Structure formats: C-alpha cells, structure tokens
Length: 347
Length: 135
Image 1 (cartoon, rainbow over the protein chains, first blue to last red):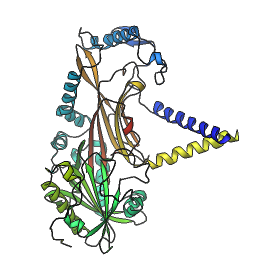
Image 2 (image 1 turned 90 degrees about the horizontal axis):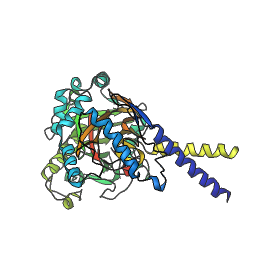
Image 3 (image 1 turned 135 degrees about the vertical axis):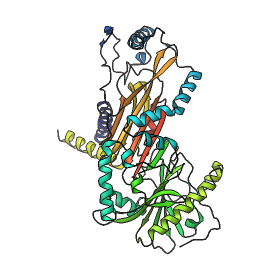
Image 4 (image 1 turned 30 degrees about the vertical axis):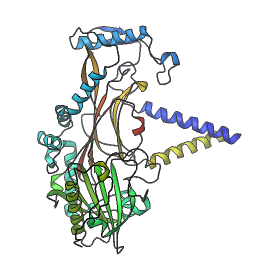
C-alpha cells in the first residue's frame, strides 16, 4: 500500500514538474498580459475577458460562451483593425476549409517568405538564393554566413588546416567509434522514419555485412521514439577490417548546404568534405559529407583509416549514382534498401 | 520529511536520466490554442548547446476572411544555446483559435560543416513530435 502511495506521489510530482517546465520556459516578451485590461496605443484602455486556468478549463469553460466570444472578438477587432486602418468585421466562425487550403498553399509555396526569413537570420542575399535553390552544388561561403557565426567558423577552419584533423568531443566520437553498441535493430527496413531509404549500392552489399541501424544521438529504445529524419545504417567489411556507417538525412522538410571553405573533395561531381575527426582521448574516425537534392549524406569509416578517403569517395559516388538513377522508382521498390546489382568493387 | 527528500531525489534523477536519453537536436512547431501557444522551438537535447536560429510565422485573422502573417523570432542573432524559441505560449487571449504556424529552424551543424534548414507548417499541438531528437 505504501509503495502504491509513493508511486502515485512520484507520478504526480513528475507531471507537475513537466508542466511547470513548459509553462515557465516560454518567451512571453511579445505577449499581451493575461489581465482584464490592456493599454492600447490608440484606443487607450481596453477591457478584456479574463480567462482563468485555461490549461485545465472546467467543462463549461472549454468553449467560450457566446458573450465571451463576442467580447474576445470585439477586443481583437479593436486591437487589430485600427492598427491596420480597416473596418472589416472579424469572421468569428471556424476557418472554411477552402480558405484554409488557400492559406496553406500560399504559405508553403511562398518563397518570398522563406527568402525574407533567411535575410532576417543574417544570411547574405547570395546565401539566401543558394539555400533556396535546393541545388546541392550551391555552397555557402563563410562571408555569406550570419556575422555572429563567421569568426567561430573561421577559427574551426584554421584549426582544422593546422592540425590536419577536426576536434570532436568524447561523446560524439564514442557514438561513431562505438556504433555497434547503439544498434537499435537489425532489420533491413527501419521504423520511425517518414521517408524512403536510399538504395544501398552493390559496392557496399558485396563487400560488407549489414549489422543494423541506429539514429544519431540515440542510446536506447526510449530515445528512438518519435519520427526521425536521419538514419545510420552500419556495415562491417567482410574481412572485419573496418566499420562503415551510411548516414542519410531526408531533406523533405528543408535543405542542407555545405560551407565552401571546407570543401576538399567531390562525390559524383558534387562538392564534398572529407575529414579525420579526433577526440581528446584519440578516438578517431573518417567522415565524408555531401548533399544531393533529396538527402544530406555522411559516411563514416571507423579505424583502421588506411585508404579511407578513397574508400569513402567510391562508396559515396556509387550511393549517389544509384539513387539518382532510381529516383523515379515507386515507393514499394524504394523500400527495399539493398539491391544486388552487377557492379565491380574497386577495393 | 525523509520520504519527501527521497521522492525529490528520485524525481530529479529520473528527469535527468530521461533528458539525457533524449539527446541531439530536435525541432517542433505548434499551433495549440489549449495552451495558448503558437510557437516554434529548436532544441539540443544534450543540453550542451548548438548554433540555432528560429523563426515562427503565425497566421492572424484580420477580418473579412483575410489573414496576415505575424513574424516571431528567437532573437536578432543566432545563438549558441540549448533552446531557441520563437512565438508565444500561455497567451490564450491572442491564440484562442487554430490558424496555422509556419516554423523555420536553422542549425549550423559543426560536425558536418553544413547549414541545416527545416521548414514546417502545422495546424495542431503536434505533441507527438515534442521531446525527440527528430532532426
């Protein structure tokens, strides 16, 4: 009985803490205070209806009464109509489906909006155009980046050139060099993703054994919940000499652009960045990054790193080519990620 | 008194462990009248911090069936932070209706040397997406 009570108390405290976290961490700087009156620049004091404890409204309060609705409507109208110097009444009904469709379409297709957002975020005109183009060959130069990022990226570049490798923290290095400890499943199909996986070229399937898949920064089944846009598929060379990780990030909801000053390679005519990554305790791996119009790819080779650049570039090229050719395949066909094709392995 | 102390310790441990498991970047936009929220958030669940910038456009009724976009930003500059927030929460007066939130999330991925952009239009509380390293 005691245990039960303790358990219930524990659950209650956790719920309260989580709710408190969400309520207190929001930025309310632009908000109108939830009080009965506000000071409007042109109207003076406007009386507003008080909404009490809206997160847990009583049944009767869930839907505002008509009088409340009208009051909200009037206040809202007063606040915004005069600001816009308009006399049109606010439509109090739900948004009609047809209008909503138009609104959605307008927003989703409004490239001007995205363009403005990029300029507002500090990107140069050139960078904004390159990001919007969706062309994987379009890179971002450090000078075209937001000012607050430029010095930090320049320092990274200088350090990388001087050392011949990039620093990574211990946790990130462990996630790659110890990737076999984080395998979440061994099936060919990957759950919890909202895109079709890239086709794995014969160059990989003929030379490596598939070990399984995982997601970045995922340490257990709990953190694997949710829908992921990035998948890591892990392969071991047939002679067990090294591990190869094929990481792909779907660009269905956005874009990914490389920084031009770091580019030092090409994958199937696309700009790419090859780098050796090293942690403070000398955990080392090789990484190759490039993007296509559909995916941002990263390949990792876990030591030994002999010939790692050539291996990763070969794998990257075959991965890009086969997926370019098969872009038009149906969803069912694309859901089969490992394709046996007659291709000679160059290593 | 002892029991309360233990319960608190267990709770905090649980929260810490749970948050640690939810590691890596995630992003979400929400149109959530129940919480008075229209917001877009970009988070590094490791808590270590990443370079983020977030912009959130909210559709506002302007009368005559017209809507206008109201822009919100996480700030003037990019920030190296664990949480980049743009929007409003707890404002039931202004956010009492569904109209749609268009979130734009930027992340400078230092490991891959890439600028990552994500754009999502949502018309729900989107609770299923919250709390995960979905990037």
